Every structure is written in structure tokens, then in C-alpha cells.
Image (cartoon, rainbow, N blue to C red; front, top):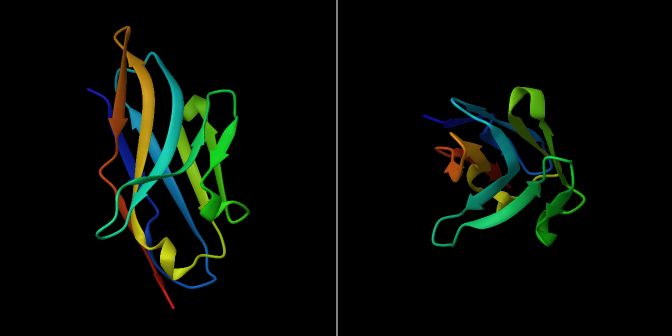
Length: 119
């Protein structure tokens, strides 16, 4: 059984920073892409940032220049450094991993971590 466990969410004032972590564990052959999504109340889940195994990254326009995604392949862990946070960044943040387990491709999600930015 594969699990994604997120940590690092919390309450921060506007302009502050947070760092999210997501560690994948279990029977994993290889993790291809990893990413962070977020969902605010009443809104659809949206991609925040993604990173390939080779380190290529992609960001939502709303977070470019403020957020940085990175990963440690040896630890099966992905990070999201969030700087200059704004109230509109408030959401539940979910980790996602596109991986191969027991020779078969699967898409896994973490349980979500709340990020609240106060004005």
C-alpha cells in the first residue's frame, strides 16, 4: 500500500512563508511526476506546481515567482516552498504522485494540509 503524507501547513500572516513536505512510502518502483494542488472553499481543485523526476517544473501563473517546488528522489519526497503568501493562497493543499507500484502505474493523493493566510 502506497501512502503520501503531507506536513507543514498552518496559519501565517500575509507576506509570510511556509514550507510543505510530502513523503511517499510503501511498495514504490519509481515515482514519475509529483505535484501540489490546492482547493479553496467553493472552488475547484487546481494545480499549483508540478515537477518531473528529472527536475523540470511547472507553476500556476498565480504563484510564479513566489513558490518553488523541489523533490528528493532518494527520499521519495516533494517540497513546496511558499513565500510572499497572500490571503488568496488560503486553501487545502494536496500532494499528488504519478508512480509505478508492482509494475503498474497509479495516481496517488495525500490527505491534504490546510494553509491559511491572514490579512
